Amino acid sequence: MGAAMGKEMESRSLLDRMIDRLTVQRDALAWAARAVTGQDGMVLEVGLGKGRTFDHLRHLFPPRDILVFDMWVRVPPELTPDDDRLFVGDFQETMPAAAERFGRCARLAHADFGSTDRSHDARQAAWLAPLIDALMLPGGVVLSDRPLDRPGWTPLPLPADERWPYHAWRVDG
Image 1 (cartoon, rainbow, N blue to C red):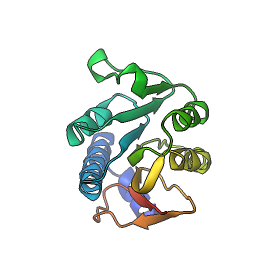
Image 2: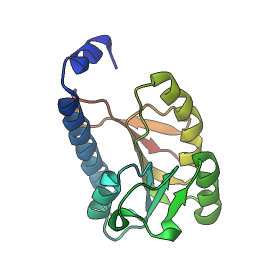
Image 3: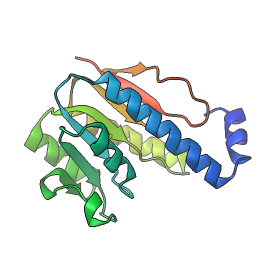
Image 4: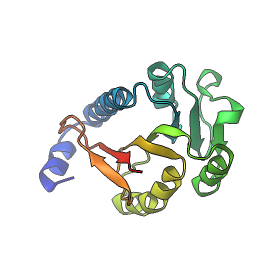
């Protein structure tokens, strides 16, 4: 994110920034749904959080299985994934376990793991991208609120929206 954009975001209220982030995220997910239409494969939600995105993914992809990963579950029962689709614990343990169980199974992955600590996010992205990659089908789409650098992923141009940075890649191969 450029310095000008950073200053612009800081001058906005927290509520305005949250609305921008969620709007851009929703638009990116709609774009990704169109990008994978007609292709088989599961959906990955890396970070259940409050369950908002998981619920939205259920509406975008009603017939698809969604594998969900998080450190803990803090959502009401109606937003809790089925036990056999929920992986709770350290991503570095749960994602390889899911890859062993399901193999390359996902057509779409969504990773919303950003924090206010950009250096922490960059370190996490370095080890998270290979874990996501191990679950992705060739031609699949990865969306994230943070840059993920992975050989074999081609950056995709999301529709331009300066309100909040979002990133997309196609998994080559």
